Length: 139
Image (cartoon, rainbow, N blue to C red):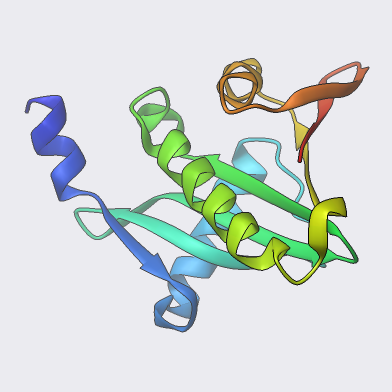
């Protein structure tokens, strides 16, 4: 299968259209990938391919700070799924930030070096580096 064929087969399910079984699989994926989803985050999107959850995006607003977590099944990483989920997160931030004014920021706690590189390309800056994760911010 060519990449464009693969990409056209991927489905993005939003909000209330996400079934509880999909949520369960998404949380399992997060756990398998070492991503801790904090209780303030709500699942926003799941990515489906051939009836299987292959990725998910969780989001949260806290005051003027937007945060998100992205998880992609290992065998589908580095194929554009995470990038698309990050794009959705940024669009969601841009739409919601109007209510918070110019002080609104996106903050991401990144554990995957590939995601760190992707976020740098999307205008994020490194705020802090710790063993095993990097805190990144974008205004």
